[in-house]
Image 1 (spheres, helix red, strand yellow):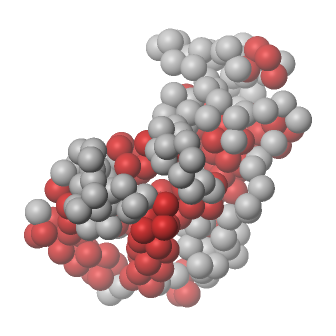
Image 2 (cartoon, helix red, strand yellow):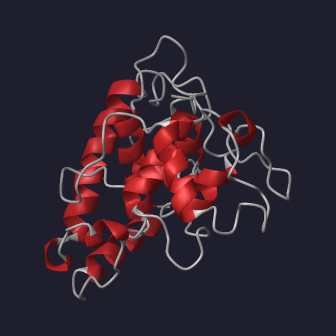
Image 3 (cartoon, rainbow, N blue to C red):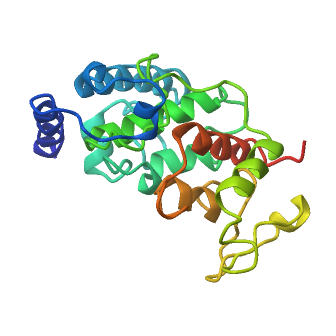
Length: 238
């Protein structure tokens, strides 16, 4: 309902009246707290996400032409009310999940780039007032994201530096393994550690995205983006 979106936007406006004190990794990398404006960031992300959805999704998903359950991809209230987005939580938003797992757009449609995904992800997070998990896909206010996918070497270095203290045999899953072993490794609950091109089914990304791991000090936004983009691009061995 419209009241829900109005409430969310009012919550963001309220943030302007108090100091932004969350010491997110992106702020630590040089973004001063005083220059971070939640309303401007949300406005930028919303405008850019709408442009992406209009260019790459609206051909099929607008009310006059939609043949699927998603009837109006450009109406934020509709997307929220009908459960296509979960404001504040990209990882539980079907719209975002359908993009990152490659089920949408269909083959032959305009390609969704890594930066498109990052923009939409950050927009959904910001819609719920969640600014402390942004991976930086705004208009430069938080540093931007690289256009090139992360590599296995980079991901392996992050695992070696930040994960192997516990996951080298002491606690499952064991991560100090070869590339081939990493791609077949499973967590104790049976979920895959890495599933190429499927972030939802990749325990490694889910754990670091939600700051569940590493314990004590989460990965930086750039490290999360390296892991995200590597998996999304196919988790290749470079």
